Image 1: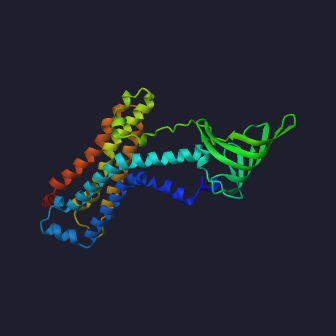
Image 2: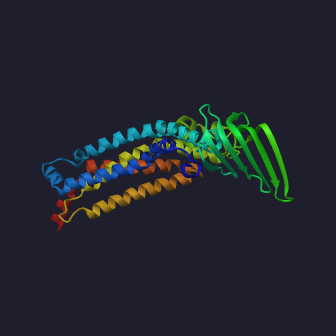
Image 3: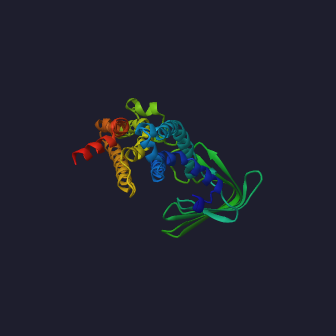
Length: 334
């Protein structure tokens, strides 16, 4: 839209910034996992965690910083998914719809040809201070067998109930039929023509991301939605409950393996690789279950289980698993 339709850079920046909450929502659990994994691995490399374990500090106590950051990011992600993203998405789609469908939102540069995707090309010589334009030229090839050319001294972009129109003042309309090569010419003092960029409906359709969680969970009561859209909305509503807590799951997952495993002078490559594998497995399972839930809602409980089981597994290992006890028993047996 910036390169082909000549939209200003500030509008591009505004529309891009409205997508940031969506990107943050996707990347935050992975970013938390990487950050926690890096910090705890660094603590092990500097022997700080080794000293703490030798002093009797339990893994559950060492995991408190990761637990705190996981909770904070989960709460913040709840806000992002249920308030920030719907508002930003609504504003973004409103801007996008106006730019794509409303010609009055287009920015025509002086002295340049502006092509529209329905076969219309517009040239404007100068923008006047009163909002009108002078030296306007329009080439209309929207119909395959007819070419229309409009030239006028002045013009104005106006918005009507039926869509955007251009009012031409003191000009000439020329039309040629390519099938029989018939040519018509008409001089006028006032002439208006509709040049809707897409010809779509005047009302912008509401997306799933724009709805609040109550509308999504109660989509079954909306008679305007198809069964597939109802399932899609319900799944999105449940994801807004589940997905923020992956920040907590991944934060605990990143530190659990490093805290319960014995120190290895050669490094913790195997432990880190195993944690990364489980992170990818949980993320992939969540994606697969989300797609399946869009087809049948019986999969919804498994979405919750994919989050709850790893969370309780991490809590259990941090609170009740004692690596030194099992290592001591192994040494006695040998």
